[in-house]
Amino acid sequence: SLIFALLLLLAAGAARAQTAAVGTVTQLQGSSSVTRANGTQALQPAAQVFDDDILETGPAAKLLVTFTDGTKLTLGPSADVIIDEFVYNPNGGANSAALQVASGAMRLVAGAVERVGGAQAVKVSTPVGVIGIRGTGFFVEMEENHLSVALFSGFEVAVSNGAGETILSPGEGTDIWGPVAPSQGLTWGADRVNRALDWVTIAQTFERPLPYAQPVAVAAIPADALTLGTFKFDARYRY
Image 1 (cartoon, rainbow, N blue to C red):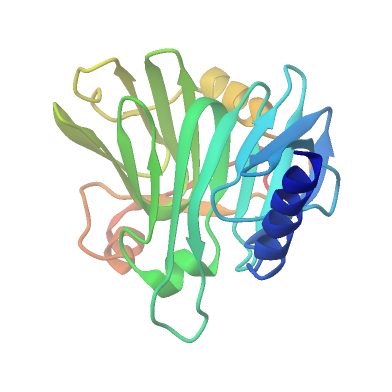
Image 2 (image 1 turned 180 degrees about the horizontal axis):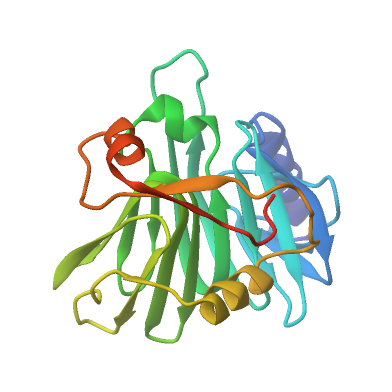
């Protein structure tokens, strides 16, 4: 009945009110939506984002979500991403972030949750592979059965599935086609990097580029990557 349906909507709204938001829509270009237990609705700037939200962007849309710890998630056009979990405790304890990318492109620049939570605090799942993060800025694109992953800055990213694992250093990327193992990590050319950044950048900024270190070998700790590696510069626009 109509009364029963209204009661369900009120109950869903009350439950949502008691749940703390994990992020906020800080930039929006084009049309995007969020799907929750009580239905699908259009997203607006300053809208709150919660665990279990399904975020979708339109064919010409882009979306930037800033989480409570400062983590920034940008979705490119025709993206479908689920916020499985985002837990941030600045004083320690449980700190983790888990996302699912069903389709489209996204860029994640990790904030305090990655620093406080330590190794493997941030994970991204896709239909063909899982990405474990020990880096601050990386790109993911899922198109049908093809997954592309690149690490733009930070320490390393592990891309794995049942067939194998590839560890990426800053500046490197890998591809997975269906059930096969991730390809060897290779430095992406300027054209591919710029395409990826264009796909997940809403507005260009003109800040000075930040240096990142590319280790000559896999380092045990970030300090080794800085002292034993070679410095490179990302001259493209950043957050």
